[in-house]
Image (cartoon, rainbow, N blue to C red; front, top):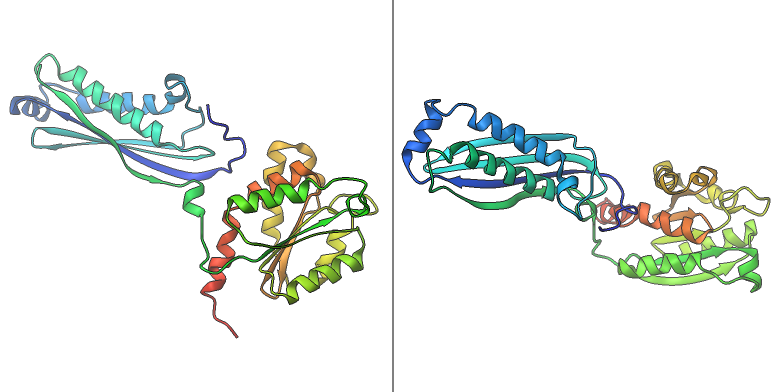
Length: 301
């Protein structure tokens, strides 16, 4: 079973179809004149039940709440076309649920009609629409996102500890094909942090990702250092980091992560732990790249 624990929940929609092809027009007539009652009603109930029980039937599928399921039947010549729509706010795709529902709906129609038509066949089980998930929210700016990673840590700057958080962030950036233009380690000093951030803005870094100094010790001063530099703070980014982190680690509530704009440069301050930094990247990317896509089309002064 695929690990989806690092996915974020998104609104997903899937529509699947299946076709029951009857062998003679009399079968269609029997449905239309109600001599075979409740064929479609029974098929609809069976499909909805199947959608909700997919996780109990398909070994590697996940179980999660379904927010909406509907079934539609239509007759086209000798074909009974079934469409099943499923919606859910989920960490994983719902195409399998829609396919399962359409398959069982078709099997139920077949079962109801088999005593009057021995020549039916089920065909065309397929997905006709799928929407939602990470792929939907992936924006690829046409210009490179020039990114700097800044590690704030007294011990790493002194050489007594190795940096893992910054390297975890860089690993995530590499998978996204985001350009790294600077990687630095500095101590937890307000003026040193401010000087480094200003210098990165001056060389037109598009994105500055800081890890460390967002906790509650006396030496955790990253928020105090960078908040006065912001032209605009972006609370939603920090909220997303903490909300995502809270699902994985209750201590995430103690983080003072923040984000904002210095001119057009987006600055993020992430936790200093390796796990906190990596999970923050999972919470924000690739969705955060939408900012740079928007800025490409924004009017310039």
